[in-house]
Each structure stands twice: as C-alpha cells, then as structure tokens.
Length: 412
Image (cartoon, rainbow, N blue to C red):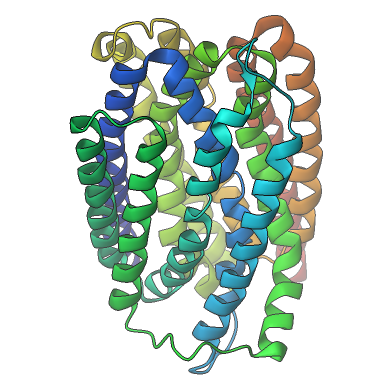
C-alpha cells in the first residue's frame, strides 16, 4: 500500500519535472540558438545567481511545518513569513550585485548591462515563496497531482510568453519577464489547488518563532548544500568567459533534470519515514529497501544518458564542449541519489545539527577547490569537483546513519 502511494506520487513529481524541464528545455534551445553560447552564458549567470537565493526563502520550513501541530492560522503565518523573507532577499540580491566583480571588456562577472535583468528576474523569489508554501500542503496530503498541474500551467505560460518574445525579436531581458509572468500564474494556481485560506495574512509570532528556531539548523544545512551545488557556475562567471559559462550551463541544464528525480522520490518517502521513525525495525527495513531503489534508478538513468550525451551538441550547434562536461557530471549521479535519501532519513531522525556540520564543511571545501581549479582548468574542473564534493557528503551521511542505527538498536 505505502509502496504504491510513494510510487504514484513520485510519478506525479517526475511528470511535473518533465513538464517543467521539457518546456524549459525548449526555452533553453531557443535562447541558445538565438543568442549563442555567450548569450546563453549571460542567461545562465543571471538564473544561477538569483535562484541561488530561492533556498533562503524555502529554508526547509516545510519539513518542520509538517512535523508541527497546527491550526487554521498556521498556513497564513507560513506564507506571511515567506513573503517578508522574499522582500528582504530581493533587496539584498539587487544590492550585492552592484559590488560583484565584473568586466564587460573581458566578458566576465556581472557587468552593469545585466543588472536590469537581475532586478526583473529577482521578482520570482517572492513567487517561489508562495509556491514553496503551497507545496507543503501538497506534500502533507500526498496530492502531488496538484503539483503536476501547477508545473504544467506555469511552464506553459512561461513558454508561451517566451515564444512571443522571440517572434517579436525582443532582447534577452524580456525572456526574464516571461519567467516572472509564468511564476505568477503558477503561484495563483497553487494557492487555488491548496484550498487554503490566504487572506487576511496572519503573523502568529509564537508559531513563527518556533518554526524558525527548529528550521534554522536544517535551513542552514540546505543553504550550504546549495552553495556547493551552485557556486561552481557563479565562480565560473568571475573567472571564465560567458561562452564557457554557457557551455557548462547548457550541460548542467540536462544534469539538473536527472538529479531532481531523487528529490521527488525523497519527498514522497519522507512522510512514510516520519510515520515509522519510532519503530526501528520497520524504519531501517524501509531505508535499506529504498537505498537500493535509489541506486538502481540512478544507474538506469546514468547509462543511457552517457550514450545519448553527443545529442546535446547536435540539438544546438556550437555546444560541443557541453558533451564532455555532461559526462563528467554524470559520474556523480549515483552520489546525488544516495545523499538525497540519507539526508531525509537523518532529518526524520532529527539529526539536523549533524547535517549542518556536514554540508557547511563540504561547502567550504567545495569553494576552496573551485577557487583553485576553476582559474586553471575551467568548467571541466567544476564538473569533477561536483562529484568529489557529493561523494564526501555521501560518506559522512552514511557513517552517521550507521552510528544512529547502532544506537537505536542498542537502546531497544
């Protein structure tokens, strides 16, 4: 019974990602064809920089929200908190970009001509806050079919507006307008499907303080996770040309779809882990079973992806370097699958502080490695370091899981 529920909701999430990535891929191909690797590099710089801050709005609030007893005011308090966080982050993003390294002559960094696009695209941060909050409701109810509809409608609107921009031969700036509009429609649809009352907004200070306090270790953990997950393309922007950033960003566009799959599976499994966490026998049996499933799925994706990698350069001419970069990234795919489930296993066991240490350390190591190797080897180094970092995280998570498992077995 549980297996069928997990499978069904994992399928819904996968279909949602296919819809989002499929329609998003069309946008990617249009940008790559119209603006070349340098233009796509600018697009990758902006999207990577701004979406880097999405997690600050997420801040793992949903994971703690689902663990707490709530009343009718709780959802509105969650949305209010995220709206305030979003506004603060938007101000921060558009302030810090003014001080980032840049050189239009050398084609590196974030020169002033990119700033209006960053300002426009940063508006999606507040819309993501609404979407994250609605997703908490979908996850609790295991109603990922709603997520599927949100993804299809939002991505469809983004693609439609993007096509209009290309038909009118508008510059890259207007592509970001398409993303803002698509995200806005998705946020409205998500709220409607959640069937939660939103207005008037509520600030339940007791509930919010408790939510923030319990989310802090996990939120910082996932923020560190994102640092070493996204810092490579940001550092590439400072040290290498927009064209090379475009090659790496194009390869990562496909890899990003693959590493989203374990997240969907983990989201579907997390409520089940919470249900059985106090029953060690059942809990560890579930973990063992799904670790095997995650590993198998990663290999089933890795092998065909490796052989079909040359198609990346055939779809859009001029992106031949992306094939090698994509294959280098593929080596880390099993690591991402296994760390995904172990991370949520440890969260269900309230090991957030340990995760904070692991991902904080890994983020620091990743930054130092990228700072040293990217100026020397460029995008290839970034791809390899991605795998090295994730393998270290996997080892540390597995060690902790074994320690906790041994302790629980001894206790019982």
